[in-house]
Length: 135
Image (cartoon, rainbow, N blue to C red; front, side, top):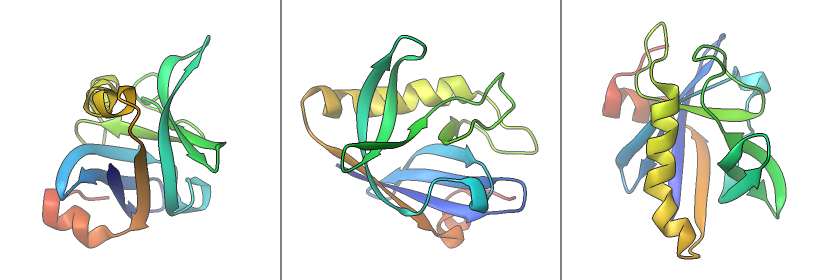
């Protein structure tokens, strides 16, 4: 399964949409371009830690690169993470719910042992066409 993360960069944050075969799965927030995960193709895996429990991790040749994580306290974009959100306005909304929905969408594929890939690209036109997201 190959997902795509289409990004639009701004000075304060990076907006995004995760899509599968052209269908939106989640909106995302990340840190600004100079501090967010580099564009490229990464494998998505389930990982468990005592601190976070089960979560989705991005790896490159089995080296951890980043993770999917809800906004910290519902407001702050975490370091080295992609934060799914339900609504992107001046204040992002329902990050934990968006995170759980994304995990639910990928869980069946990952549990069956199939591989999931995420290709991250700079593509602000995809964002505007599919959702009208604004910085």
